[in-house]
Amino acid sequence: MPVLPRAPFERIIKLAGASRVSEEASEELATIIEDRLKQIFKEASLLAKHAGRKTIIDEDIRTAARKLGFK
Image 1: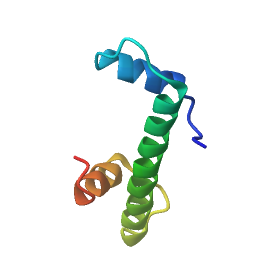
Image 2 (image 1 turned 60 degrees about the vertical axis):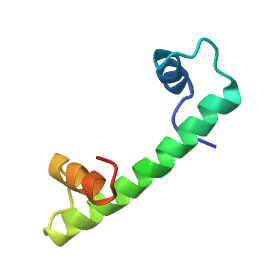
Image 3 (image 1 turned 90 degrees about the vertical axis):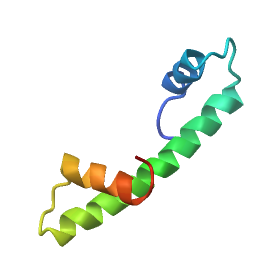
Image 4 (image 1 turned 180 degrees about the horizontal axis):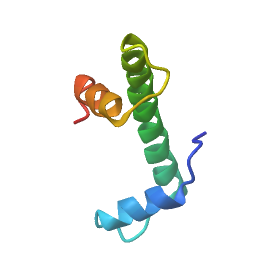
C-alpha cells in the first residue's frame, strides 16, 4: 500500500488526458512511483555517504536519478 496519498496521482493522470481514473489505477501509479523514489533515495544516500556526508543534497538526487536511468 502506498505511503503517498492517491489524490495527487489522480490529478496527474487527469492532466495527461484521462477523464476518469479508478482507485486501482491511481494506487498502482503511486506504488510504482514510490518504488522508483526509494531506488533514487537509496542511491542518493550511498552517494552522500561516499562523499563523507550524512545529508543528501540535490546533486545526490540528480546523480542518482541519472545513474538509475530516470533522468
